[in-house]
Length: 199
Image (spheres, helix red, strand yellow):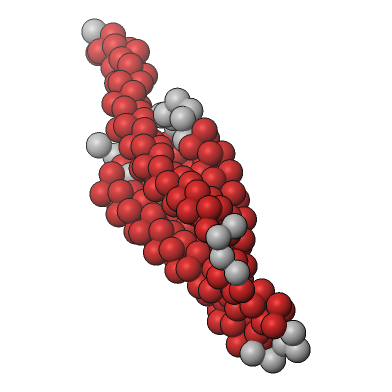
């Protein structure tokens, strides 16, 4: 009889572990779906910014002269690039949510790192804008002065918006992961040659 009891315990153990694993997949899939929704909302904002740049600056480009014309020219270029990036990112966030904890964690860290890296690039755009505006003062022709000044002003505007956008997106994703994903990871325990999931 004692042997049968142990046999029953060992027979049911995989079922218990399977049930625990399945119960952890649901929160991971929910988190991944929420992360994708957060990305989509961000891409709506970036896409709207891009469309407004292409539309407004596209119209103003033909109605202005001097540095303002170059300002709008650069804004149209930025708008086109941002619109393409928003479209590609939006399509990428439309996939089915993953219940694989490792893949979800990797995707989350990649997302946070991309937004963090982008904030550094945005600061570089702003510095580039100041540089072009300063350099415009020493150019020999009025056309070149206008061009550099307009491009510099556009870099300041675009870099400023993108710095705010990427900073907010990083903070939102990090806060979401801190509340919803990282607590799931705290259930992992490591030992010599073992990994255990504690419930």
